Picture (cartoon, rainbow, N blue to C red):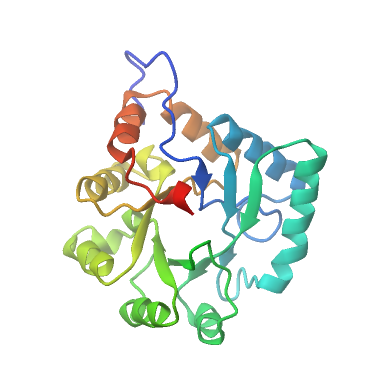
Length: 244
């Protein structure tokens, strides 16, 4: 995965200090299972220079049917645990909305979890593009929300239809790529697509998409590579993360 020959003497510095995509709210999705794990993951994030965390629990039909009301006390409990540990990271949450009927019901009612600036994170299914994504991008903007498409570089059905990226971005969807994609954690093609999106000026946000200690280890190893320094330089000054 990584070329360790002639490694840089110091880890790369992330081109952002605000993470908008991670799964550190305990026990609500496929990320951290408990507060103790969440604290350890957030500690790793702070070591990378992250100062603000906007956790993004999954909202998906039948699996992670999280709501603002169900998440509020859990996030409050994690904040309390961080304060007791003396952690200075700023923690809040929004959500990663899978494009399905469950999420559409929230979009229609307006009972949604958003980022500052009325950004809302949406996620395509991995099997095929949501057939209503274009209409959803339009409808969300009519409601005063700006959609952020999570990790477009991971949707394999776009790999042979790369013009679709420009279409979606031009339609008003911001793009957030994963740090783990740049680390080649999902595969070489995902890394190459992420790099191409950067080169094409289509990357607005980068998120860790951190779920567990294995992901943290992969990011640690990545930050020690020349590739990480190259990516950081290419993204410098181009991201919206820290402007939220």
